[in-house]
Image (cartoon, rainbow, N blue to C red):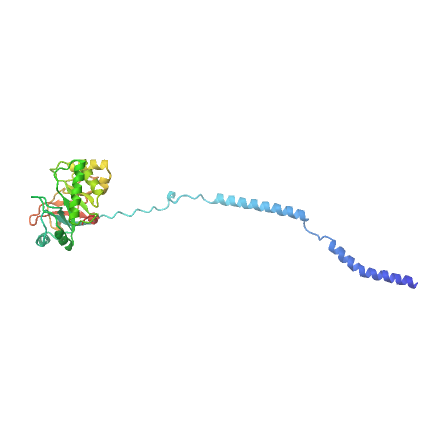
Length: 304
């Protein structure tokens, strides 16, 4: 009996010791309940990802479709257009020109009887019986008085032929350099109404001066019917730079010499497509030997 009792005690003890271990072991091995098996979870995740991508793509397409097409700002009629700044009209200054040599007494005569000129036209070198040439000393005096000098070249009587025009331009350059006229100043060819003139001479004069340190200028009677106007416009048709580079000085019309404060409104009478920058509105003043001029301020930088 004792042996049987001992045996059962051992079995019972063993069961008591082993049973908890078995319970822990089986509890660890038993899979937990999940909403989806791993494979199903993976497939579902993939499906959701694809759906998400499709949704994003659709959203992007919708967003793209809903955005209004961008147009160039220049095509939007409702946008106000910026108005170009109005061109500034040049102011007009008063001046004179003379064939006489200028000294202090001559300047005083002009100031007392006509006014103080901002510009004074003078001839390059002396032409016997016609004009006295500008000297360095005279130029210094005029600059000390605050006047700018407009250089005039009149050493020819025939304004025809290209080579002739180029040769006269080179002679004018030589005179200008001799008395110290700086680069960038315009030299004006004096083409009188009685001179024969053609477009070739004008092109020769202009093109030669464009290749020199100076700028081309032309003086004459530029009316709609004058020979000079016709020659000039013909020269422009052959070389557009004749128009772009040349400063024009016209003596038409001629209402007569006046004091500065009685000068007429600026109104030279030239063809519509001929731009006149200097208007000699009066010739042969009675008190002093002067002609009177109105000059656009836009050309002052091209004077000396």
